[in-house]
Amino acid sequence: MKDRKNLLKLTTKIHNGYGIISTILGISSVIFFSFAVFASAFEDRSNIAVQYKVGIFETIAMVLSLIGIGYGFVSETKKDRFKLYAHLGIIINSIAIVLHIIVLVFSF
Image (cartoon, rainbow, N blue to C red; front, side, top):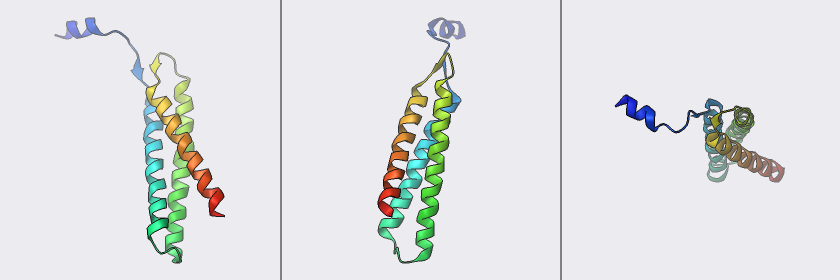
């Protein structure tokens, strides 16, 4: 059975670990961004603890996006690897960074 599996293998490419990490960081960033938005929308914003919580969630989300986009670009430079997760990571992290910038611009 193993010989047959090796005969049907059409490529030796594998998924890049940096691309997978980039996608995971992008999804995590979107989750933290959602926590910040929901905390800002549905909790009492006059409470200073809620303001700190929203700020911490937003900061964590922004840092995760920046790190994720870095990993995505590093993953793009690897040869003979699939680039699906690298592309997904770059797209998700770029959208997240744009959302963070919009929130920062309209919050002041």
